[in-house]
Image (cartoon, rainbow, N blue to C red; front, top):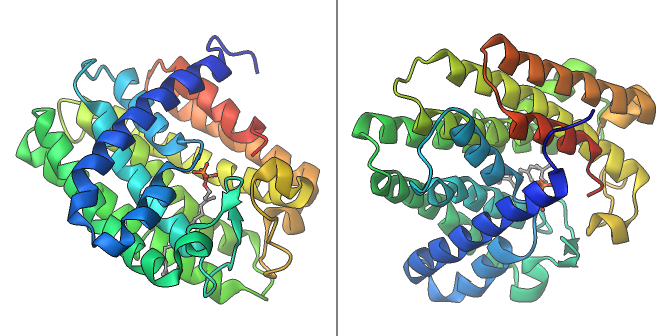
Length: 303
Ligand code: GRG
């Protein structure tokens, strides 16, 4: 796909915005975390990462006319704090037992398991506190702010990411079919990616029932699955040096899209989903070159 957005330059600029907002968030939030956990939290939040979720949140906000210089970066990193905790916990020995992430030893290898268990748990309320504070600083109404909290809590919880993780653990060693795999990953990976877009949309739009909100959710659901399918392709085809982590799906006997569809079939399924994502925006007359470029990036990334 030809894109009017220069993706590497765009991503670099957006990542700079995110890194600045994460630094500010941590300086406000770390004093509220148990002292023994602060280094683990700092590592989990600041070591690398593509920062896709806050970038999607900012792109949705800006595509829907959210005023610039209104602090959307601060709000957007709330979702990255949830993502950071999920990776810290996902890498623990009782979960995926991963020694390496983002090209570095995982937080529990450096700081020990207790600091990561407690620090990761501390990040969950801190992320919601940050969402509440940042949406207040943006001058959003209490109705909108409550809705933002509800979106993030539901996406992070049992109906979303945590529920998906539970299904993932239950599914190890079993051969899941396409519907089961889609259901698992809509929750484990898709829910937080979708919430990122919905948060940006709700912060930007004048009313909660605006049709552009549903379009952002549909876009998010499609790229969420495309993201996971691409993750499975990378796990099957790339090495640890390129990925920054050890490929682990076959070791953990996980069902994957590559096992179901083959590498080419999985790549095509991911591409089809990016087409659906774009169509969802077009149908709602949302002009969003950045989101079109991000849909392309989700399936063409190499890590
Ligand atoms: C205790 C049941 C229980 C759950 C805790 C661990 C957990 C919550 C949830 C796991 C969620 C998870 C790890 C989902 C995987 C999503 C995914 C593909 C992550 C990789 O995202 P990237 O590639 O990572 O955006 P970077 O490093 O770029 O930030």
